[in-house]
Image 1 (cartoon, rainbow, N blue to C red):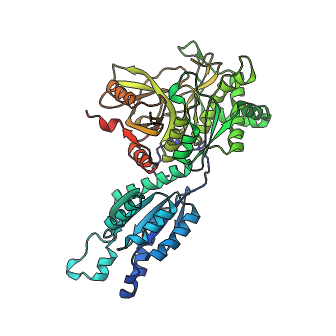
Image 2 (cartoon, rainbow, N blue to C red; image 1 turned 180 degrees about the vertical axis):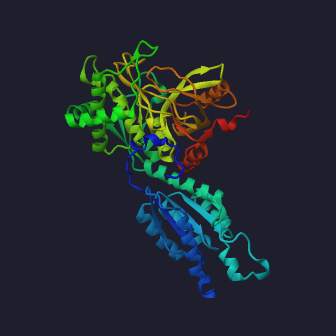
Length: 498
């Protein structure tokens, strides 16, 4: 992915090979022109080739290119081709003037987001030497209003429109590449199997989620996973697999000595070995169930095997999240989905909540105990041994780090009083500086206009108290994704002025 902000030090762990996103491309024109202007169709197809070449060779994207669609009849054939390819989104390339009937049958049939692309070859026509032929080569925007009108009238409005130059147009390039990234997110959500193990933390009313709502909104499936299934996988781990995982963990994390917190000390050998064994079991659980994400929380009988197992998941969960398989604690299905969205945009997406404010320097600590997206850490993440997991049961190895300094985005997926999903967004900055050495993730996060006002406005949106935190500013892209998914969204920091 071009310009992916994920910290390159951890590329070796982000080694997933997902099935490629499929993006359809169909150029449109008017059949009548071909007999009137010999050679025009070939010239237009050459320009379509330039557009396709500009899209690049992204290994995570499979391009499905239809031939020039120049009549209603051709549109039905194009629709059949793109529907059979099961595209995640589609680009309609306006090669020249084209009637709306070349587009509407396609958008109705495929029922996928369709973006209208109008890229003119020439910066301007040579007016003193102009010809009808030359005009038709540059009539890319002529039918944009007509086609958009037709799409809107059949309840399939354009997912987006870009007007620009075919070459040397950074604005258009950025818009189109944004849509490609959205295609990857849609592909990740559609058909995803998200594991749900256990139950929500007692009393957290904002955690409760009807899995069918997730299926309706994101076309995913929530699969119920029993803790005993993970336990069986952990028990089956062979010694060589555990040794390999220990080696991976030792290379991935730093292991500091004791800090100021009496409950956070060095990781013991027993904690390292058990966490590594559980990490192997988690890998197997994910592979066996084809999981694209997992949310979990469970206690188990004190002194029992599952009571020990659940706190031992933190290291494996963080490694999975770094690989693009998000794991959310406290059985927060909504935030697991938000983490998946952010990861596929290239932002990471770490399980987070609000921690104490710093009223002196005006920032808030953002982080959580348990799983985190270690691939976006500012440096090697730390592994500490916790003798107490505050508010939870058990003890074990826990992950600690801050996010890379620079722009950040937080995304909170919640359910409103009308039982609908809602996405809240905010853009801020991750600051360098000391954070508590407590075995939890913590990032100094600054939001405008000031931290207290931001938190007041953020909380007034009625959000789940967890959210996904990623590096880079992606609120605009996430808002566009929400619109495609027909989910309301709000950018809290865009509503605030200095």
